[in-house]
Image (cartoon, rainbow, N blue to C red):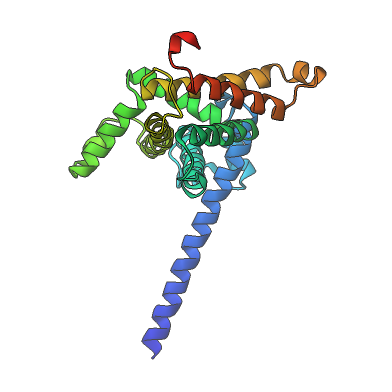
Length: 251
């Protein structure tokens, strides 16, 4: 009886310690998100994050090895949450074109409301450009090695192993768009004569371009009373026209 009580106490302490560690980790990420949202990445220091989270820099290192790991962990969680939302809410009975419009509207609103998303995308592409690789190539290398249980090789191929989960989430996100495009071509709601991946990349670039320009021209757009809803509605109309073109040369 006494032995069981001792085991229960030990188990409770262990669970309490795990919960405390998780709270500390989340506090670090929460404060880091505020800094990264408001400042360029190179203007955020580990000292800033540690002070705001009320932990020492030594404690911070118990959870993250450097600033990049914190930054890309935020990205991984952001796109994991986004993917879970889409998985749950994207209507499977919608035509392909309508699915694209659903994805477009939700994602552009996410980027406008959470500017950190765009920063993470930009920085992840910078890392891939440095390696002269694409998300697909990264994803293939990761999944191929995992499936053949050569996980060690995955980490040997990356100087920043914390990017792995982010790349996987980015590819999962891209898959939603690619599947919608394929569905649209099958049900004839998408007739543009472009490769699937070209369509997806073009739509990505449009989202990032619009978000960039809305931030850049914020004061001017306010003066001419061109609000966010008008821009989103107009962009949805333009995307519909683009997807229904019979030839990319005519759009």
